[in-house]
Length: 286
Length: 180
Image 1: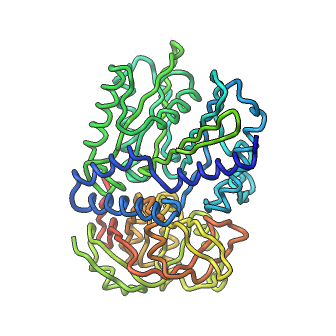
Image 2: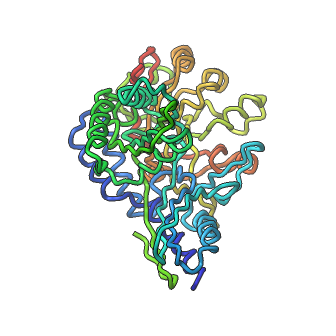
Image 3: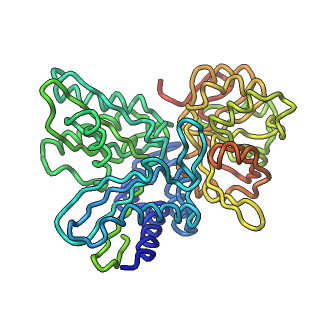
C-alpha cells in the first residue's frame, strides 16, 4: 500500500472541501437569491460570486479554512488501520503549505500558533468502526465564527419538546449576524452534555434539504426553519428572509433527569468533502 | 440606499453623509486588526505604531496569505466576526482616529457611541467572501508583528481598489441595521 499516495489523497480531500461547496448548498443559496430583495440580495449575490471565483481560481472560498475536522468510518478488515491517524495528520500539514490553508491551531496558554494546523487533539478525528475492508473519510473543516455560536442547554425535562424548540429559536436569534447567516443548524437532542453537542455537529454532515427519516423529527426541523427565518435576521444579519438554509436534528435517549440540547452552527460555507480508501490503498475523492 | 465610491482617507463630512443601508466601494489603504492586534496597539505608545492608522480603513480580518519570491500574496481575505473587538473598539477609534471600520456581524453599544462621537462608520462586508475580497486587493504593502502574532492575528496593510459591496450597518447618527 502506497502511504504517500493516500496522504496526497487527504490533501485532495481538504482542497476539495475548502474550494468547492457541495451542490446541495449551492442550490439552497441560489434559491435564497430568488426570494431575497435589496441588501439581503446583495449579500447572497456576493456569496454566489465568491463561490464561483473560489472554484475557478482554486483558492479557498473563505480565509478561515477552519479547524481540520474528520469523521472517519473504518472498515475493520482494512489492512493499515494503525497508519490512518498519521496519514490524516500528514495530509493536513501538507495541505497547509500546498493549497494553502490558514494556520489555525493556537496554544491556549501561550497564544503561539503551531503553524501547520496540527496540535494537541488536532486534526480532530471521530472514529467509527464498521464492517468491511474500506475506509470512508468525511472532511468537515469548521470555521471559528460559526463555532463560537455553539450552545449547550441542559434544559429541565418538564419544558418538553416545545421548550427545546424555543431554546433553539432563541439562541439562533441571539446569534444574529455573527455566524455568517444563512447558516445550517445542527441540533443534538438527548444523550449527555457532550453527546448532544457531538450529535449536533454530526447532524451537519447531512446534505441541505434532506429531512430526518423519522417524520415527527422531520416536521420539527421544518417548524424550526420557518420560525428562525421569520425572525428577519437575514443574510449576514442585515435583514431578510433567509437566516437558515436548513436545520438538522439528531437524537439520543436521555437520562430521566436531563434534557440536553446541543446546537452546532455552520456558516453558509458548509464545506464538506468525502474520500474512500480501498483495501489496496487506491482512493477516490468526491 | 445610496451607492458611493470613496477614496481612503475619507473626510469627516463624507462620513457624516453616510446612512444605514448605503452601499460603499472603497479604494486606498486598509489595515487588518483582530483581537490581539487591537490589544497590542492599545498597549503601545503612539510613536511605537509603525504606520498611520488614521488615514486607513480598519479591517476586521485574519487573512490567508502566501509568501512568494516577490513577497506576500493574498489568497483569501474576508471579514472576521466584529463583536469580538467590542471590548477594545471605542478606545481604538478615539486613540487612532479611525473613520471607517469593515467587519461582519455588527458591534455593541460602546462602539455605537464612539462612532457618533468621533465620526466613524461601521460597514459590513459579506462574511466568508474571502476569494472575492482577495480579488480587490491590489497589493500587500507591509506586515507587522507577524512572528509574534501569527498569520491571522498580524497587522497586514493592503492597498484595495473598489473594495465592496460594503453595507453601512452602523452610522454616525446613532442608527444600526441590526435587530436588537
